[in-house]
Amino acid sequence: MKISAAVLLAVLGCASAGNPRPQLSISVRDGTFDGLEAGLDPQLSWEGSTRSGDLDLSYGVRASARPTTDLASLPRSIWGKASTDVSGWGVSARAEVEGIDFSNANLDIDAENDRADLSVHIAANVGGDSGVRSVEATKGFNQNGARVTVTPRFNLEDDTRDVQLNYSNDNTNIRLTASADNQEVTFSQQVDANNRIAPTVNSKGDLSVEWERRLSDDSSLTANLKPNDSLDVEWHDAAWTANINMPIDGTNIKGANVAIKRDVNF
Image (cartoon, rainbow, N blue to C red; front, side, top):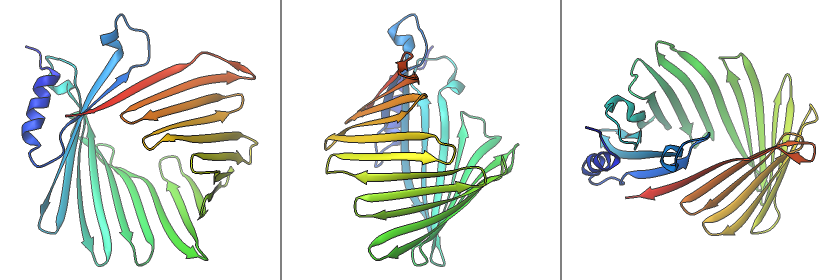
């Protein structure tokens, strides 16, 4: 007998007493399919939280909502997070496994000190491929009404490192990312209440421009143009999200890839 999305919803609904109800997200899958049903990718997500002593605990699951006889194929990912305060530091650890493979987990550790305006993030693998993947720290400053942050980042998987400097003041934001091989700067300007434009250029001569248009309180349109590369458009309207990717060669657009998603709360 196949396990359906309705059964999965009922189980999670009973388990979610006092917590947010499950959320169903339906996306259009990439590729060519025989029918509409095969082209849809319904996913169900649910999360909850509790407290144990000084620990705040949260947990969740993301699962396929397709009918199946294989229960092991339902979970896409399972995660859990523990947070607490230690000597003025807010510390949290979040572990996530793909499917039901508990032999290997992605681990994210965060520590933040508001008084020192300092935060640290560590990403690692635990299990068969144990090891630290990346480390970054962010130090913030408030100077004459402006906000400045400095973030050195180290990627131990590919042995790369860079520093990101971010400056924001009123409607202007400037982000500089510098490494040994490349330097990139983004200048973001809130033109008015409904329009934001952000050009990005790097030391290799690559240029891109992002334009965000606010259509209403819960609707917006964002376009990102990379000359001779692509035009990406995202339209967000309440629970609907549509993404369009169009490869560009000179002035020619070579087709379009479209993804549409709808979130449904029960």
